[in-house]
Image (cartoon, rainbow, N blue to C red; front, side, top):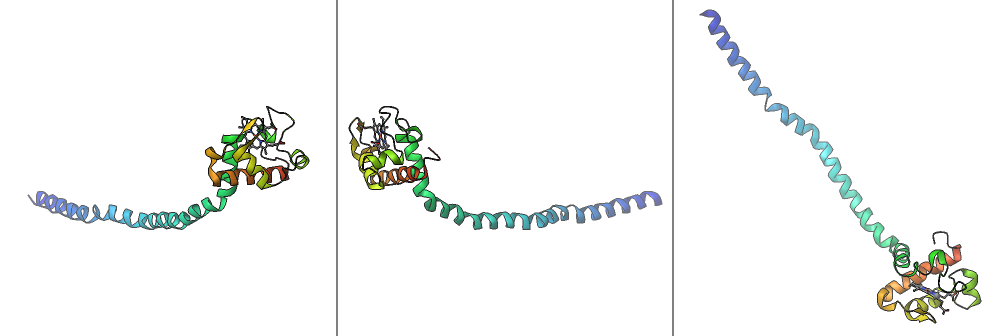
Length: 146
Ligand code: HEC
């Protein structure tokens, strides 16, 4: 009887101990994870303006490159010309033809030239400007990214 009572007491004690520790464990896990979660949330809050800020800052070049790739590169790969081989977008050619400026390239991009039709309707005013700017920068730099 005595030993049974002892086991009874023991099991109650075990249950008390268990009850004390069981709910405590997930709490301490949460407590340990909280700074990590806080750090992640803080980091993304800090990074968000960087990401948002990077987009407009790079828009001019990235947009021009993207628009050139989508609209012009089919006929002007690497600043060349697959239809009229001599009519390239290389600095030397553009200079020879008096097209050596962002403005002259923009006019052709929008309205076309000879065999080339205009892309003003496709690109829009801002698109014409940024693609012409990108083409001119590429010409000046020797088409490193053609
Ligand atoms: C469907 C083919 C085609 C596409 C697309 C095209 N071009 Fe052209 N491009 C030509 C041809 C052909 C010429 C030569 C026109 C001529 O002299 O008769 C030319 C000439 C030019 C010239 C004058 C170059 C020179 O040496 O005389 C520029 C600048 C130019 N293109 C820019 C662009 C830009 C910018 C785009 C994209 C918005 C573009 N082209 C899209 C075919 C194309």
